[in-house]
Structures are given as structure tokens and as C-alpha cells.
Length: 118
Image (spheres, rainbow, N blue to C red):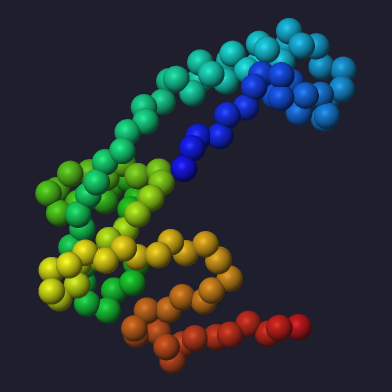
């Protein structure tokens, strides 16, 4: 998977589709300001292990959450999730992209309400 590249000329063209009279120098200044702001944030990739609980479907990833080594999680995007099965093998959980799927945990089956299709 490659990183998508875009030229300054393409950015200026896109901005001018919305703001046709925007001066090029002003747009360049906005691009530079955005690059400076992006450079202010740290980007890092890390891994963490969490202990699971039987019949529990959701786990906290908020700022106060901790991994199994008691390290505070700093999560803004989850790329992959692996789950260890009973044999000690790690299996990747597929990423859920369809937000219309109704999710339930093991104890809420009787409380499942399916929305009307009207």
C-alpha cells in the first residue's frame, strides 16, 4: 500500500473550485501553516496487550485505559486487533467497516431490537 501523494498545484486547483478568487500566495500560506501544525504532533506506532474477559465484547481504549503491563494507552487509531485462541495462536479480527451491522454481546440477545425498515 503506497502513500497517496498530491502536488501543491492540485491543492490550489481544489481550493479554487470552492473559492475561485483565492490568491495563490494566500493558499500557499495556508498550506505552509497546515504543514507547521502537522509537524507539532507526534506520530508513533505502538502495540499493547489487553486481558480479555469471557463474554465481554467491548474494551476501553480511552485515554485512561491501561494495557496488561499497566502502561497508559495513547490511542487515536487502531490498525489491527489480534485475539489469542485456546491453543495460544493469534488470530486477526477483521475490521468492521459496515456501521449498519447490529452488534450485541453474549448477554443481550433477548434485548435486541431490530429497527423498522420503513
